[in-house]
Length: 418
Image (cartoon, rainbow, N blue to C red; front, side, top):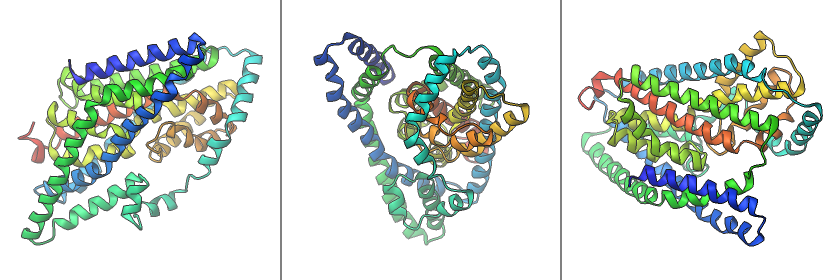
């Protein structure tokens, strides 16, 4: 039985057991998830533990594997352009379909009042976190870390990637003998990190099962009405956009659809359970190498960058969340405001932290742009579990699709490997 099958079985089993415990009303059974959750957290921590050495060594090796290091600029420029196209497509998809879908949502007045009260009561932490979002100037300054070791410890992946990229480029300019020694060390650390990846992935079914049971217990079957409609809509739209990414990988990236699906499945399973794009990186790298056979620079340079910064699922979810809040508060959104929502969404997705629920934090500027109360994020934060699962799965699928497209148009470095 493949790892993917075992992980999916664990996911379904965990959901089933969690819902059963939630509906049982038995205090002894309801205590079980509390004992299992630390086991799942340990598994997620093990994945996070590997991310920094894997990203650092993969980027350095990727930079130094290029015949001409200047091609990093070409790959980086194309990667940014492709990311903007994908994010803009996701946001446009959401603002076009979202208003139509929301027109079918009928909200009872008393239910709306209760939901608004819930939003105000639970928004404190979200608003506090949102206030930590820095302006563009400070964001630009923070790209260059004063201490790359601290950036690694804080999981500040984008500043760490900037440092690693510069460090990798610097290695290309030193004496050949010294460069060879450094690259042997980097290759050794990379191989050891991959070995750790295999070990941790072997425990994936256990980790996913342990994470899913308490998740399902907390959710139960209580979601209904307007909130259930929002959760279902975000999930369906994420699935639809993932399908578009499969289509793009096939038609533009020229990848076999079955091979692409097999390459994405393990990372998607991790995404659904851990709800963090960063921890899916090991599984993405394995699928890109073993199944898709993408060129090394694309795997080593683009995928770590994409996992840290490109959040296509957020570009789908943010407009839907804003439109849902507008519907809830009885605010009509004009065509001009829809354009504003789409543009703001594309910009804010680059600052989404790679943690569960990170997208909710950066929604505040978009809400303010269309004069909606910031307190609205409290409600979305409270029901974000399922949308976050599908959102993170969309991140992974879009990253893998973008990697196949970039690889196709890099014949100088990828022609022989593909």
